[in-house]
Image 1 (tube, rainbow, N blue to C red):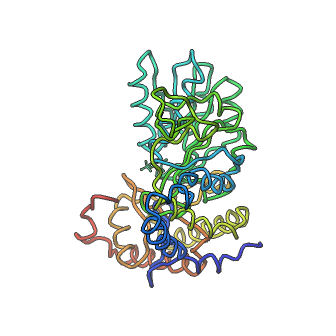
Image 2: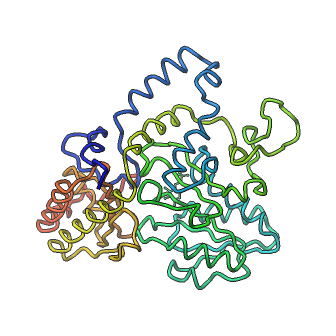
Image 3: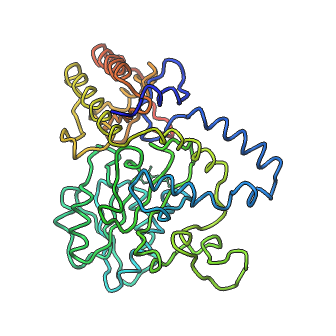
Length: 398
Ligand SMILES: *Cc1c(COP(=O)(O)O)cnc(C)c1O
């Protein structure tokens, strides 16, 4: 293993005494981000003012940073651009894909998908009318449900609750054999394990930067369009910065070159600067090393929890190929148990109705963290310390 994970861990600022197992929801703060934001705010925004768009390269940032993400998801250079939130990018990719497959009316997805993706698809279907429909099946039934009526298969590779992972290459092959395009949501894939968009023949993909890529709350999303589709993909959200010549201020819309057309409006420069600095951590990371170590740490956690906590049921597949980078357990009192854990400095999260989620990423989690987290969880279960009113009151954000 060539990656030095003790060194990557030192690059994160984590509060003393906290074991952070929620990087799948909001990545922690890389040290380099603080300094970079300081520079962008004072030296760029503060001194350059509007000149920063040219002088500091702000206008090129969505594509430049997109290229850094492209490397992490196995995408061709010039095929990824940053902007907006993931929900917006889902809509955008889906709308373009649907339009590229005229004559078909079905968007196929699964019931394990993140609700926002399904809501966005539902909104698109209502806007389109004309018999368009969103069809959802159980995750295990997706492959079987792909047929000649499907315009677009829209899937999130890793289930946000259970951590179950779809077989991307296999589903793309089946979809293409039936004439369907595929939109992948990589929210729980990018930065979690190697992804091979180009090798596997993906059409469209989207993902967020604030989970495993550690860009901070509200960090911009990314969109990938395969080079072979870039001239055919028409942007449904045809904003001025996706125009071929934004500063010509034409009254008519003409889509920009390549992936640039997937830009919409003014990019969030402070958030992009944070992401750019957060990505420096990845320069020294081999994604195959990351994956091998993540699986070993997950297995260690699963073994320790199963040995000490018989009341918790593993919700994540045991098969390595079929899981992402989180481990989930079920318990009817999952919410209260998670609150008790957080009170002891072990931060994971809860997803209704009964899932305790633990993100495991080797960038800043090591064996000692795993052992301590499992021991604290075991003590909470043995003593029943979760069974207190203060742990059962639900906060607005779980
Ligand atoms: C986290 C997540 C989102 C969140 O979308 P935002 O628009 O960034 O709030 C959407 N889809 C999936 C699959 C996610 O995991």
